[in-house]
Length: 272
Image 1 (spheres, rainbow, N blue to C red):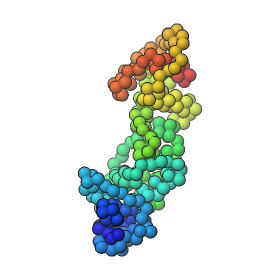
Image 2 (cartoon, rainbow, N blue to C red):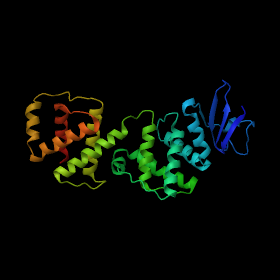
Image 3 (spheres, one colour):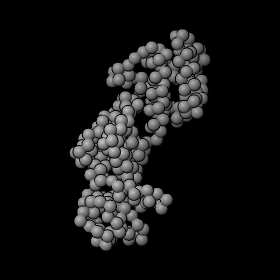
Image 4 (tube, rainbow, N blue to C red):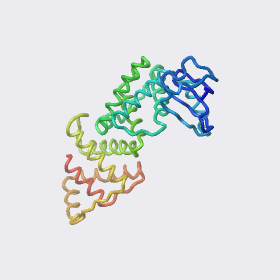
């Protein structure tokens, strides 16, 4: 195979044996090479066949990305895979783009606060730790110190591009929105990493998963009596439930059924 284009030290394009053009990534694969030179096949780490409709955008991205950014993204992906993450085929490309914009914002002193940082840290601890490691990798390769907020963004990004994860952002949005309502209605405050906060976030995460997966409450024996008991156990329960119903309907287009409201009341009783 011969190089068609050399984007940088870590990326070239070539015509594959089946006749299709592909982008190949690998440490040093483009070093001191020009179009027409043979591709060092021993350095190929990733091969991407890019669809025509997104090829122009992809090639432009590679031409504008520094090799250090690509190497950082490759190491982050490798670290994630060693940690057990199952990532989609486009994970490296997506992460390269993400890190490039993060570095660009940092260099231009543009702050982008992560409003879901606390929830991400609590609900996705393994991913957040990987996000922190990603910041170290970016610092090592690119010499840029990204803020902790970006560890949360990278964690969410890795979750999003994982082959076996869906609905992560909706779950975080659900948890944050419902937790804020509960805190306001009941006048409670939780320390970000306290046991109470972790318990609250975990219960709301499972509730979100039940709702998004349409998992109904299977045991509804005497539910009406228990539902009424829980609802009137505190005068704030009715207010909280009405606000939570409204938020879930408005934000997710979903109307809670009685079983789900009962499930929510059960967890509110456990939490508060």
